Length: 249
Ligand code: OAD
Image 1: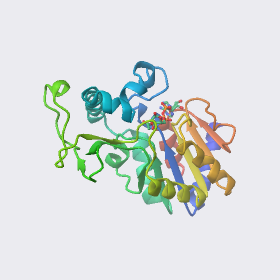
Image 2: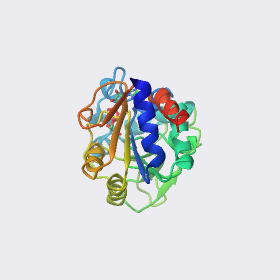
Image 3: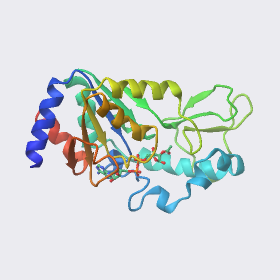
Image 4: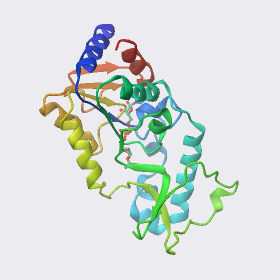
């Protein structure tokens, strides 16, 4: 059954003029990066309201930075897995691939993907919390041993710096939402990988693609609210399913 499904998806990918991919935390799970809502998920053990809202940052910026530094350390120790790597090679072997990710971990870039829309920002960047426009790339910056007690970093303008990620209650960059929506509308095949499909607007993209006639393929270890919309459901870890598709291209 799975073999037939994989063959069918590979055949559609080969002839597609445009492929869109939406990824969520599940694609990085096998790299050892915790997801948000599964067993051991971040939101099971930490409170989003205390750590990932503008109010939390205003109230306790040091705590918020500690949490993000801890996540940077986890992500810094992780490597792209076979799923990230297969997707990056799709960019070269298929006609046009646009990768929209909700992940902030930068693992798609490290795997070699280039055509990426990062809807929720990137944990390796910081930006001015007061909106002077400064954005600082901190990839590769090794946190000091006492990072937990380091003061909140400051922008050159004197305001606080904050992680350049989207928090609950904040809007996404409209230009990125627009680009993601265009990619969904123009896709012949839409792959939705490792997301619980609960956070909008990302979760709405597969329906947009479906309405425009795309074949929607879900890759996940369990059912999601999108499963009934998907034309094909490939049940299993992304790091297994994506290389299996690639082998059939
Ligand atoms: P979730 O943690 O909500 O969902 C992860 C999904 O990945 C679940 O559906 C799992 O079944 C699936 N999964 C787990 N391991 C997998 C594997 N090896 N292969 C395939 N699928 C697997 O993460 P997201 O859907 O990404 O937003 O969460 C969306 C947004 O909510 C995040 O971007 C974050 C969070 O709050 C912000 O921080 C703004």
